[in-house]
View (cartoon, rainbow, N blue to C red):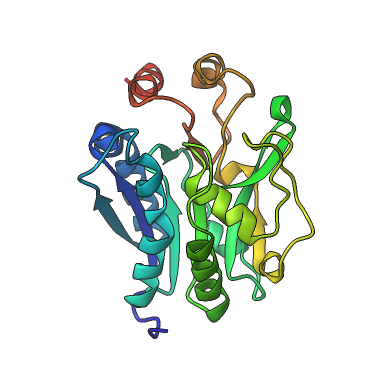
Length: 234
């Protein structure tokens, strides 16, 4: 493992269809947070986008995180390009205990009976446990479901009960040793407001997203995300 020589890194990535969201809305908030809390911002701009390659692109996430650790980052904070900071007063890294190599927020979707770690915001320390975990995610590899490539692999590496083929009913299972090194971050650091039809509850969230540190607009098309962001921010 490379010695940590770079401090903290905020890492994100986007393909062509997400670039307008990243450049116009979310990246400026990443840079503001980074300036307040001492992060270096690293942006990966994928050349490939679209349904045919989306799962493969998503599985690049653990590899990109590992790359930054190998390049000497003390800690990597991954944030999906469709998430943004609404508050800048707290660094989630401060919530990791000495026993934790990573931190994730649990997402709860009552209509699906599902509780799962959401990898849209993912803290990873440069320690041996993190490297071992990233390697296990790589070994598990692609999982079923267009939106579940990396996230489902992380769930399996944590010993999660996966539910049905669409992950309905997913919840904490017997666990693996990696769970002992995983901090469960407050929901405010990866807030997806609502339940059910994303097109309905994201429209509602335009007015209700007040308290979150990080607001995550997952589950929408790029055009739908743009519409929500314009309604909220102009």
